Length: 278
Length: 284
Figure 1 (cartoon, helix red, strand yellow):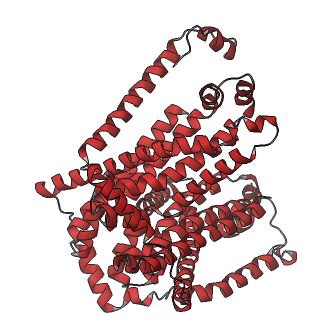
Figure 2: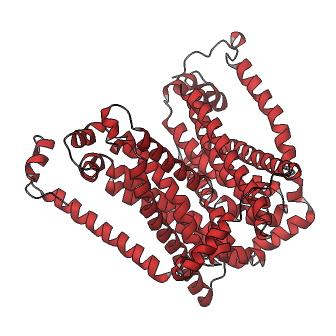
Figure 3: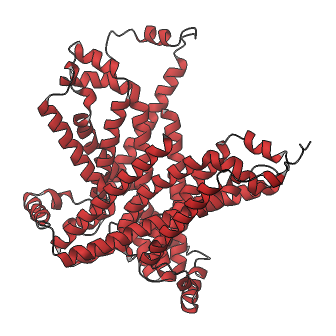
């Protein structure tokens, strides 16, 4: 069932000029990038680094699996999950009040047309706090907190709490503002308090989106809790860091496997939870 | 949480007009929700209980005063021209790492997305499964972990950092690309295929034009993520602003640390703004 082939002589690519010039521009831009990043794949393939890599990677199989190591691995895995969960709980406690202050949806003065000066300044102030909290990566927060509270899970929990508090607060405020304003305004106009307007006007419409975003962030927090271990905040990351530094390939293999399984599991749990709440 | 005296049943029946109000599924869903809530609470309590969090050390007045002094020691930021130039160089390095990493990931992600979006016979299915598995493995290992593993093969510096960004981002972008290729309208491709045109050309002229704006938009979104990641990769020795931060914070040179932090925040804000603008142009 083939249609007649097209006469190929008269055909040309109508987008040829645009595609060609885009590729050329990309190549010109690429050159300084390659220089700046010291991009040199040859270093991967010189004999010494190949030998070191091969020795390291060939140790991955079989992964280390004696009972003592596995018990330690299980303990560190739980610690990773616990740091993420505790951090996210504190982040939630930071985010909820800030989001409620930041969202214009609950503004009483906005009902009269435009927001009053003082409430506007307060809202913008809280927004800036949220932006600052989340624009510093959690790893940097962890580095700073390790200096303050010492090595251990406290630094990790605090770092996740602050960075994720900013993220959650900003997104919560945005979700509340993207909902239909009519129910909340109707309640506020008729003299209900802000809390009631929130509970019965805004929340019913946005609760599933709010829960879904929170669960998604929990999943992200587990991933970043592993990363935080690299600066001494405990958990799987710390073990992975020390195992890599000691070239203990078998341990690294086992930890990576556990880590991939943990991420896949939290992915599943999070997807299932979001489906239930949707 | 229900207000007393509120006619619940009436509200529900008014919402689902025509469906019989049995109350059964709603109650089941509510029970389900309560179980989940209980499980979440148990998880939270267990987390706090098992971690040896030293709040007492941290929240006592003397400690809080120490933290205040620590925070104050960051200011003012170091502003000597020589140091600013060094910071600018590191920022450029971070920027280049994030751009090149995203670019490499875009190319590799597209290459892996093609088999991952393949449909058809057993060969295509096997390819589909294999490429999905590879993408998931790449994606589930964070950039920082890739970087610390790559240090063994590629030594210190921005090069392993770029590769680490590229590897993780390949996993993320490959999955997103595969999804948008799968969701592209099949008719244009079919129209070319029945005329006997080869697979490569069908992809280039029927599928790619449809999905290109979305692919670019995903790549830009990942670039925003990668500038954040690139800024901290240096902590494990992979170059850029992160390496400077780690070095100066390690030596307790707080003013220098403050400058680097400010540069980080500015760089991230700049990339966010740029990417936002470009994406707005793309989706217009």
